[in-house]
Length: 199
Image 1 (tube, rainbow, N blue to C red):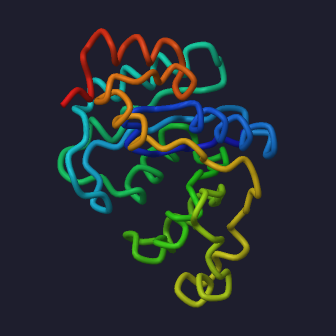
Image 2 (cartoon, helix red, strand yellow):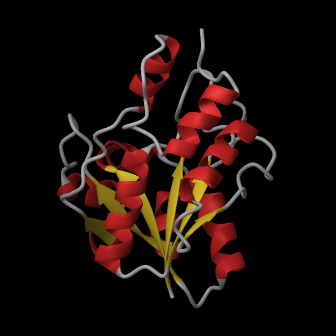
Image 3 (cartoon, helix red, strand yellow):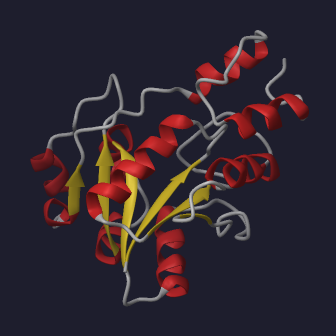
């Protein structure tokens, strides 16, 4: 099987995330897409919502889609979470005969050479890069110099763009504005009920 892996802080998960996962699934004929909320990520500063809230919002958001799955693999691992460890562990759990497709934004692709063991990541699975407004597609030749072999392991999707910002959603909640068009209804209800993102 071809299996997608979509990591992120999901703080909160929103309709843009679902649109990207669905586009990758349809385009690459993925049997499943695993959403992997990050516990603590070395590449992102600042505070993020406690893991249990972010996991529950992902669970609510993907519930209507039988081919979307939740993995709490990073929550179960102590310390900082590195993608190479997650991909390695998932590969073992899901079956080494299955092919993994790691979904990331063009902005993250630009940083990819700075990740821990990027060569190992592309050895285990393929990268699926999706556009983000304001971020150009990184130079593939430069990426190849930094991570030899990446060109053959990289799939670039030209759409859809991740045109919704989690930062904007958090700001709107803090200001008392509606987010119903930005997140699944169940997620909007959860944020409201648990009084998340209020200043």
